[in-house]
Image (cartoon, rainbow, N blue to C red; front, side, top):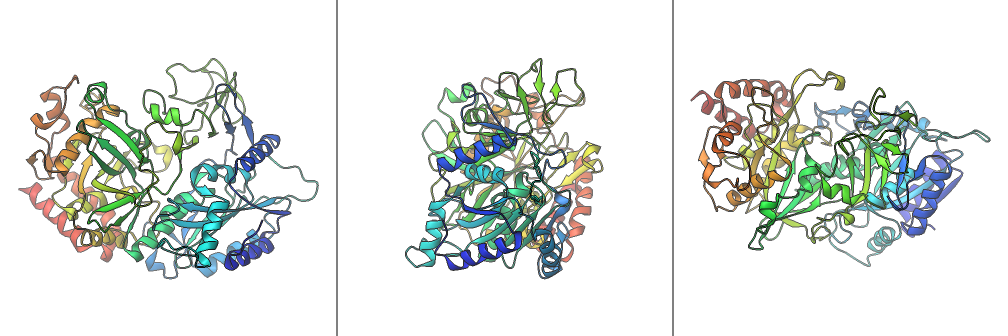
Length: 609
């Protein structure tokens, strides 16, 4: 198999000469390819086939202990001008980076097969769809990409037809592709025995915004190796979006249908460990489902949004699957995610039960008496350390999710009525409030963050600012990114309302003030009713908050007194909050949009008043 797309053919030939694989295989995305590669991975000891009765067509992988997560300190934005990279990214001169990497890539696939994976992020017929081609020496990458994106023959055919002028869906980048070069960096000499998880201690994940290229060396794991995900769908896509007047965001998209059958959509940004996937696949409490409330999901991680001809902001999910964190996921916290992974799934760095199923911390109240842990060792509840790595993952098809929205592959996207921002805050931030304007909402998003308490992650205690939950994923200067938010506000006639939420408020005794999980539907109900003008609210110095009488607490053991606690606003705490924002905003420097600075100044005056 090859291609009639001459630039692609030439690029693959160049990469073949550089990396020197023993074989080149073009991925067709078929079931036969999946069966062949998963069996190959089992034969090599990379995969363990799970119990076919309990978990059909599913597999467990164990990575090297040194290759378990994204490596932000080895992730680079190689913009031609260092000033375009900004203070929140690692910069490297693009020519110097390629000069550094080419000797590493030279011969890096010896003894291995190079897989050529044409893939599409977004519905194939969408004007926002992005076609990439990843070359990789990892079969693990191929099978995970098959779940996470549309890959293979249909994508290649579309690319060829575009280049030949046979079809034109108005796709941004018509007839072109994003070249994505990946290797685990572990060539094999003749007769050399392979390891179950080849990788290299030296890692580089490099993005070239001007040429729209991605080069990833040394890691076989997650967002370092599945280059359609964070690398293309956020870092590179964000630069394309800025140039062309749209938005690539680290956001879930969910739909809410009320008892009258009206459906509206919300997009939400939360930093890690803030319940993002749980919210995306929310199950409303029985009191609301009995009345006809329904929640569906379009996507759990990434949203591409653009000003639509109907005057609203439309969004698509560019992915086809979930690449979720396993620990903490359970039938109590996220039953829809659990049902999504009942078959045709890949699990990485979780525990293996004696009957050939998977288990991780938080999956059930009681741990199994014996497991094989993520490092391949015997494990019991008395063992030191967890059975599963804290960043252990499940890869599962979105199509298997019970609450998948009927519009999730609509190439025209869905119209967004509201944005949510929010982090993990034990105090200061109320359960929910609405911004005073689009500009005020952009300011709220620019300084959102979560409290850091674990010294293990190498950050000092305090609030880690994470603008729009995009801190590791903005492919250019953070100030220009915030300016794009301001600019979008001038291009859309009916802008989404912007809200901030905080499910994690605690009382003086350290107890949660809000039950969270399914009951977050009650907050979303108020959000949408506010966004559509159905209910009023109370104006405060931070924005509009709900009145108790407009908040649906039916069937919930939650009094007006409880409500007042979770909504409490303390001006002394807010004065401290404003002061701690300055350290982050100072990093942005002269590129901080004037509108953000003005909104902050106005908040300072309101707090003083």
